[in-house]
Image (cartoon, rainbow, N blue to C red; front, top):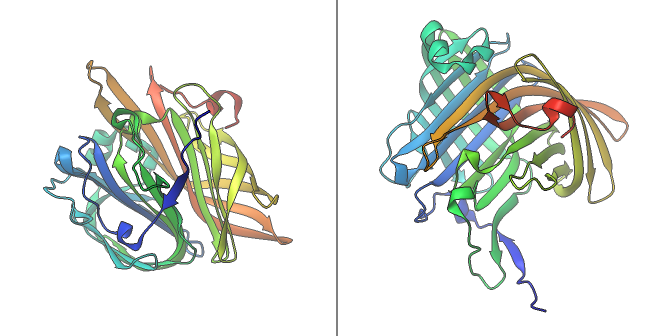
Length: 353
């Protein structure tokens, strides 16, 4: 019987910077960062995804304002190289790998009193005010790094199917986020906590059937990230994630998310359970404060339109930790492929993921 080659996960400081793109036409290198100021009820996330072989970057800025409004912009600015994460007025820069990054955005956002109207982006952008926006944030790591690039122990690459890939490498880190957010004639000083991640390699948003991703942070020594990913082959979903205890991450070996939804199939609240490799169990309650529905569309080689919906919700969480009930903030990001107008995630029927 042939032994399976050993697989290791590799992460180097230079991975914080951009990589030489693979030959795959759908190569994507992306950075995502979020931050939440619990005291103000202010939140934000930012993403740049360089799709250099396709000649553009996916650029998103999303600001959850304290009164429930959402400021949002998305674009596909042209790019000619993969040398930096800087497109469409958004720049994500590495100051010190694994320790300090900055976010700068100068441009416009549409301000939505009813963020759910983004189900029809053309109408939402046409019928809501577009205002100037300026963001300057510092992002500081408060945890170790989690993840990296899986490789064979002898240093050879693991082959990936570019047409069915979401990323070949991925890592995350919980953070502290400070700085200023300006929207129109309003301004806020943010002093919050969050999470950042980075991935690179071939990506199509349609490579996964569905997922539930719930990064959250309660303080600089206690945070979780739960992940449940549906498989196109119908096998049992992959369940995992991490919990930050002090200055150490522990793997989550099992988790559940039971969600409630409104008439638009948007998550409104959730009961969550997770068990770490140490045997410790966590029960978490989540309540959505503001949600914006986003989408990605493309055609497959046969000309069929593929439709992916991603609901991005700023969420407050409660979890008992060492006998104390703690409140934190983060995201519930739910991705589903949409078939005949209906998201296909299993929990819309039975309430359990």
